[in-house]
Length: 110
Image (tube, rainbow, N blue to C red; front, top):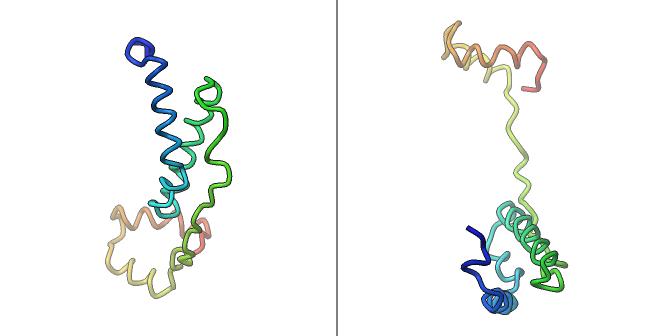
């Protein structure tokens, strides 16, 4: 089904006017850092389409500042004691132990 069969140009104009009443900055500020970045990517794709179809003239997401993600320090590396505890808990031939072996043999950081 084509969009033009159920969406008239007057509807598009009305939705475009409503979109200017709810700016992207207000929409984005309700999200945390990573979901905010994802929403901005989706909005920019939608806005690029709207500009190409001449529904809107300018990109309202220009100049939107994103929140910074918190630095959590990443994953804690395993110590030799952690590996010994893991090996004691999981017998040789078990799936968890087999999953650990390639990482240990490849010299992956613990």
